Image (cartoon, rainbow, N blue to C red; front, side, top):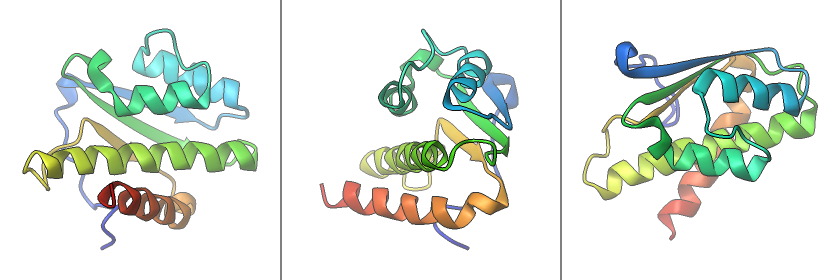
Length: 136
């Protein structure tokens, strides 16, 4: 099994914000689904906003965020690539934070369900992000 993938997702569903992303056709539609599903404060106005919101989850007030993606095929390729990069970087960030706190296998406040089609690219991006974090 690859380091960035898991077969089982453990989550306290009663304490989670579960956001279903249903085939967004544009960045604006993706942002709207994320803002509504996660009750993001102010919603993301840009990719940088989204990246910041997923790496600082204080706004969740102790809850977990679970992003369930039906499909990303409707997104323009450049937006899809940017979104996968943000997700991979956020997942690597939370794994890095757990390791720094001595909990390398600790729970993450951010969990993803991604389509199989995105697994290879997400894996590449995750490994790149994790490598950059480990190098300081």
